Image (cartoon, rainbow, N blue to C red; front, side, top):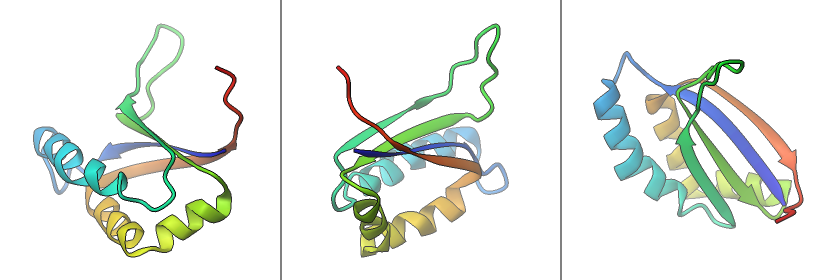
Length: 104
């Protein structure tokens, strides 16, 4: 399984935090759930601890069968629409790819 792990802030120049949260939950998340080949999808707020800073406001984990499946999903019409929405909504994105195996 290939996981794309992304962390990000919302774009404060375009949205208040309340507006961004509403848009994220009501538009962006339902759109992302339509990505072809998506197998797992987890969203959440980053949690700060005494020893680890939450460097971004939110994070998402998207799981696909392979890198090729992820690329195909983002090349699809839904993927292109999602990318355009990310350009408006998201600031300071950071992403990494994890070739993972589920242990539990």
